[in-house]
Image (tube, rainbow, N blue to C red):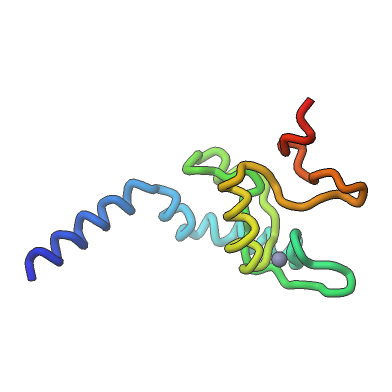
Length: 116
Ligand SMILES: [Zn+2]
């Protein structure tokens, strides 16, 4: 099955063009993520005083999109897996943060409503 093997090899090559996959596997990232979760153990998005939710993911507040400086030095937030896989992915697609303040304005200063 030479054909299958060749397809797999070119797939691996495409993945290796995304260096952050290796950054996530590094000891440096593991320590950084653990330090973030130790300092902020609850989900920054959905945890409340009444319903605390443990965070398991250190998420980049500003999507790094492969930017090495942002990846290592960018601000992190602790989030649970459902928030990371659901809310945050759709926010990154929309380009602004989902959610409103108590007075009903979007929380994210980048939201179109909050632009001057
Ligand atoms: Zn959450």
